[in-house]
Length: 222
Ligand SMILES: CC(C)(COP(=O)(O)OP(=O)(O)OC[C@H]1O[C@@H](n2cnc3c(N)ncnc32)[C@H](O)[C@@H]1OP(=O)(O)O)[C@@H](O)C(=O)NCCC(=O)NCCS
Image 1 (cartoon, rainbow, N blue to C red):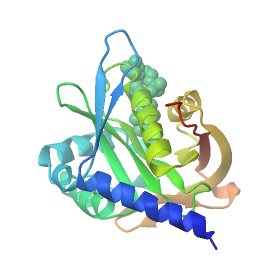
Image 2 (image 1 turned 30 degrees about the vertical axis):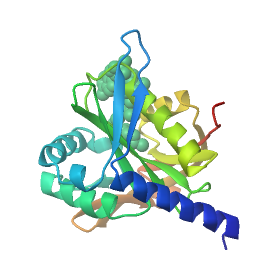
Image 3 (image 1 turned 90 degrees about the vertical axis):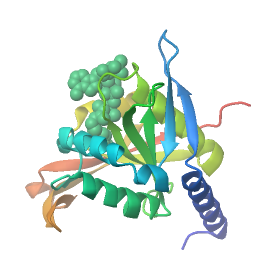
């Protein structure tokens, strides 16, 4: 049974997430490098969820990075849009930020889920570099910006994520950002709906693992 102060904190977090989606909150982050580029993170609300061009780009990114995720299906723009409307805007526990470069071109996305299962209740979600040629280091800058928002607005002191054990590039990337592996779970593909999902299984029949990684977050001085 969660403690009453934990329930209070969760109610406050849900309010912050709802307000951010309703206002399509914008976070602006400085990308490291000499060129002084900035990347904007905009929370998906009704307007971005209804943007046909964005759904088409996101679908291309999902197809190009199919091996990085624990579900397999046939992506399409209409499916992406349905996901944005029902599972992002319509899910009070999830927020997704689309990353835009200075010219307004979508680059990728990062998100957060207020997860009941996660040890600390906050999970980094839907991390995807869509465009290879964005400003150097923009994914790391975006996640660090998201961390600051999580600390300051969601009042959390840790965040965790799940990544496929086979996704060595992502694991190395998260390690550089301060994430440490804390658990590994054997998984294999199971049929689900019109596709397949990875789910826990006995190690002897595993085709991959889910690595749980955790990052402690600290408030930066005012
Ligand atoms: C994991 C991920 C977010 C890491 O972001 P990243 O910006 O590529 O970070 P890295 O430190 O690995 O990249 C270092 C450099 O390699 C380059 N690079 C990125 N993807 C590349 C690829 N597939 N092939 C070759 N080079 C690549 C980038 O240009 C980057 O340099 P830059 O930022 O100076 O331009 C990104 O690789 C990605 O979106 N992967 C697919 C989806 C995924 O695995 N998500 C995580 C699910 S848990």
